[in-house]
Image (cartoon, rainbow, N blue to C red; front, side):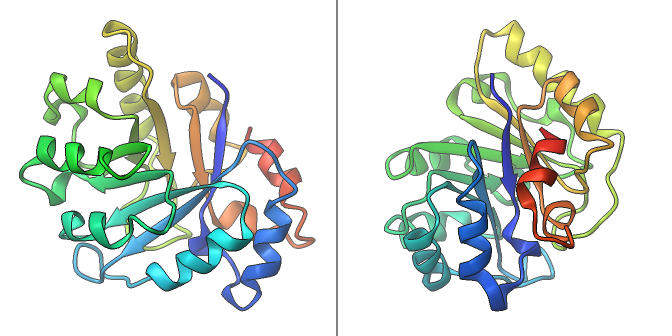
Length: 217
């Protein structure tokens, strides 16, 4: 599998959003990672549907939405016209997981589940793995950018990669939080093939995002 880098717009300069998106348009094999927060499931509040509608008119990349919300079912209908490629919800926020996965698949090309750092992979029943296209492992506690990477997440990537091989599945293993050129290699070697990076990319002083992205890749 090729390595997808998904720059997290949580770390972008929102006063220069159009210019920042145009810079990213010059780099291939990217997704745009969009953290949708409701200030309830996590203590932060971010952008919603109006902002995403503007982003899709500028960006050429696939939109990868991570819903850190208490009621993701509500957002499935509200965001279906935005043009999202991937809709990821938190396993911890949902009771009827299978039903929600089916509903998301009616409107979006890709469906993902996200696990908090303290949520074990073993909590997810085996039959679910074949129903999802992506599994997002949080390597920081969700809600804010710029946090330090939790190294124990590498073991979860290895465990998830073993599940993928055992059952002959091809879901993407995405990791989000504290990703940089120091830890990206360990994660890719462990089986991750989709890395979310925010602060590391957008803190590049000369705005040479392609250089930072290539270092992670």
